[in-house]
Amino acid sequence: MNAFDARRDEDVRKLRQLEQVTGGRIRVIELSGRPISQISLRFLVRTAADDKYPVKSLSEVDAAIQLSSRYPFVEPSISLKTKVFNPNIYTSGRVCLGSKWIATEYLDLLAQRLFKILSFDDSIINVASAANGDAARWYLRAKNLSPQSFPSDSLAGATESQKPKVSWTDKSETQPARVIVACPHCRANVRLPVGRSGAVACPTCKKTFSAQT
Image 1 (cartoon, rainbow, N blue to C red):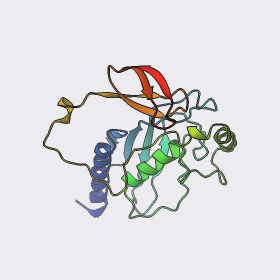
Image 2: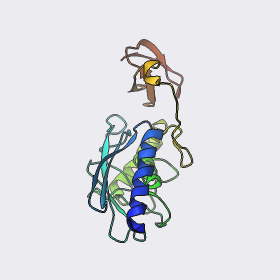
Image 3: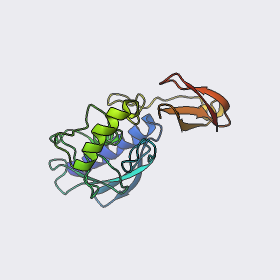
Image 4: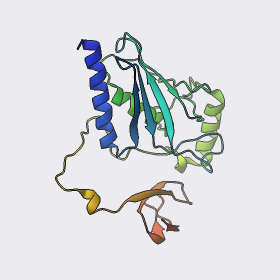
């Protein structure tokens, strides 16, 4: 195996690791090519499909990372298969990553950066040099009117330095399955066990609301 192929295999390994760390919030859906030239990912992230957000939102986005024959010395390109409304994503679906590509950066970090773009993370959203001007103007207005709605989502602890934890206990037997519901007051995501009903206290705005899962 040559160095180029070995690098791609290591990228896939790190993406699989990220899938575990994030609890499937970032998933590898498909690998194509020999050597690998395209990686399809699925992001379980609350984001905007259009200017109706936060009243209306998406919860799932598919993306494809394309690797040229000279990767990692040539930057990969990322395009979305799902239509979103975002200052840093062109209407064609191509993602504007903004920062200069570094060959030593693995694709798991790139995937986390895309998650932050989709969730309107302040640390990465760039409206000064927007890929979609209409989305940039909408974002500034929407954030001013509803600041609690941004960022729209979070990886909740998945960081670049984290690694999947190994446990000898099958937690699926001891912990109930959970679902995510949106707080009607602040639109924050609240994780609740399946079968829960009644009053729920939102950990973000502290207000209560009725939920049934």
